[in-house]
Length: 123
Image (cartoon, rainbow, N blue to C red; front, side, top):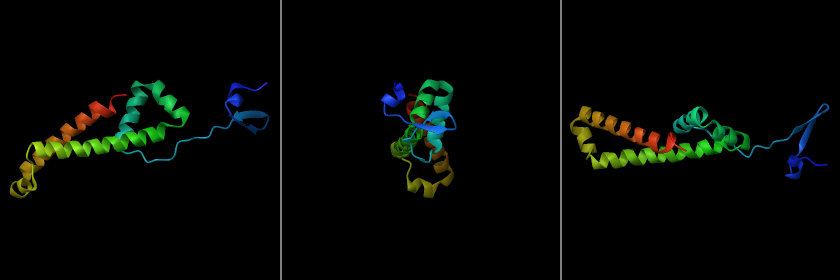
């Protein structure tokens, strides 16, 4: 009689007298950046079932990698759009460097909050 795992085309590796399921991870070793790490911590603390499902299915790393890429793109786009809407230009940077730094810091903080609320701290 086959086990359910064997019926689903699973195989075993014998270690001594014990058969252990031979899991093959479909996940690759992607590098996880800032946003992906934040989302991982959010999942671990607030959505453990989702986190462990992704982990045991071998999809966690690729999921976090995709989230990181999308969040980076969104963050960069938001900074560009907010700077344009507030008329922060290279001319302002040349004329008043400290004012430009202050405004860009405000914009990066706004963009970070938006990405956190819309992407990182949600499912």
